Length: 208
Image 1 (cartoon, rainbow, N blue to C red):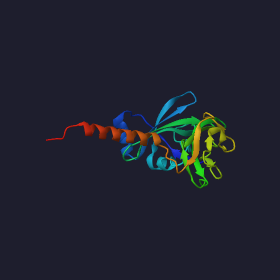
Image 2 (image 1 turned 135 degrees about the vertical axis):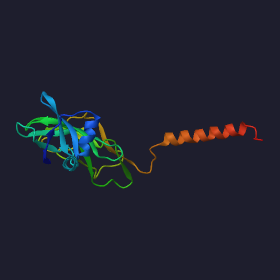
Image 3 (image 1 turned 90 degrees about the horizontal axis):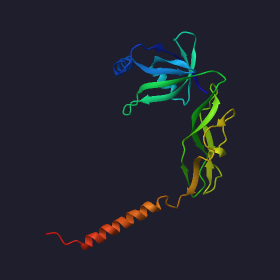
Image 4 (image 1 turned 90 degrees about the vertical axis):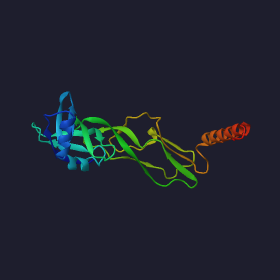
């Protein structure tokens, strides 16, 4: 997994105004919590944090708070819905050797069988792993899967050292017949609605 060292500064001002000032200075407000400690309000360098968060479940080594470096995982990342810049980050303290539950992206590899179409119902899966050895993704090889095949969470080949934390029966993906519509009920409903409107129109008097 990726590990990034980043310098933090304590925050002593709170509220929306203080948060805006922090962001104008090129930093991101954050809260560091976990292991029964009081939450620490900190700020992190915006550009470095943005680059680090491009890696799912990146392990952050946080310096600058006294008492030595702390290890943390991003748990909640808030972004501006329009511009996309970082607004706030919650960080969970972890220790080496500690087991944590995280969501990993499900990475599809291989080609769909001729005449089939892939329907992926889950793009990520919850797993348990050692905090400093979290894989970046779970690969799902669809090569050789026939039409009408289904892949459940229990069928995934998880990376070494990880265990499944999600429901075993969760549907991850399936291969369907590409020639068959998946929305026949909707099409029929639209047809019935059109017929009804036509019938209503026939019964109405002509306009003046």
